[in-house]
Image (cartoon, rainbow, N blue to C red; front, top):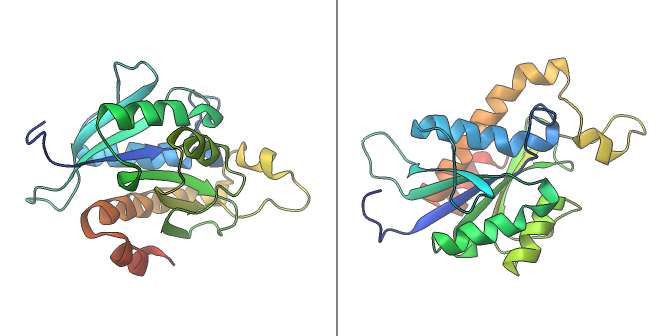
Length: 199
């Protein structure tokens, strides 16, 4: 990658590996990472740490030299994500303030999202693991709304279930918009991104 001195962003798509989990609400972070990888025109490859798949490239407007970005999907379960994140952050020399976690959010309605810096983990195992390994929660979050479970369904079961048929029709647009938010965050900063995407 050219200009190795340029600062690097680490974008972490949170999810669980393997086909069993692929369509689950909890895996929307993986879907957004896949969309960003397709924009970079590169497939995920195993990192030499062995604990994550990565894509390296530059995000930004066509014809402009955008910031260097490493997209990451951990190869372990959500609640163990922090270790691989810390490893890659060390490898690429990325401080917490240039890490973006993309994750599902129960407290935000489906087809909406919020972008923020820092905050609690709100019971999200992936965020809790990242906070524990990094020693701080001061990283960016692109919080993709999945809404609350219907009736009395346990939230833990709800996040590990597939999107409904109606939701699956809208999901590609939601994923695309979340990928736009990540691009905006690394190129234009938090304030402008929140103005555009905190619907």
